Length: 299
Image (cartoon, rainbow, N blue to C red; front, side, top):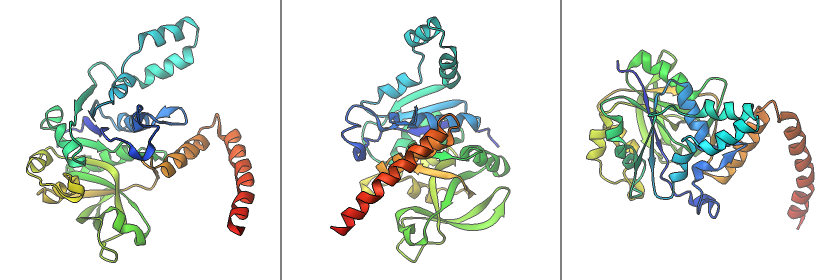
């Protein structure tokens, strides 16, 4: 079994659901409390033992590269002003030299194409794939749990969560087989099944561990839904077993305004330094909003 050292982050998306905010700022750099969304995802990968962080970017995404670089002027200013806590925090989040790589996805041809763009940087190694829109909240990281399952099986892993059975047509759904270690064997995968045909209510939540053979399949993959190269289509053709890890934490889709707002509230309440004041503020806002809602309904 080959050790998992690398992770791919597809960050070339345009973020059209957040316009005009994302006209000049990448959606991955929008902040949840006081960190960019992409920082949460990279931290999850680092906590799982990832050593090499590979970003598949697009035009107007250079600020992501700057974020993970050393900013000497800022560091010197913090040191001169005695703000040692802030400086130490930044240095703790800083990747080591040579740990980050960046490549371009010149055309928006879907997730499968973005993964294929990272082929030379990944090489002949297994790799983690983390969708940057999805951030997780749990005591133990989702990818860290997946790595434990990978070390037992040595094969492809996807993280899944339960959804409302009436909404399975919105997601990629897996069939559940026998239990294996802290996961289970996947008996089938289907992308957005028709209502009433899903093999389960377990949907793929944006975390993968894949073998490098996926690149060969992607190189021959035809365009699918949305006229894009779909990763799920390639995964279905991969002649290797897949295993599922049933993640039971909370997942926030920060690619949508609703999920982004939920993430900000949830992570603020999770922070002990701002929990109490934040909880009081939310309670007060709800008191103020409810009469407005009642008046709107009465009209």
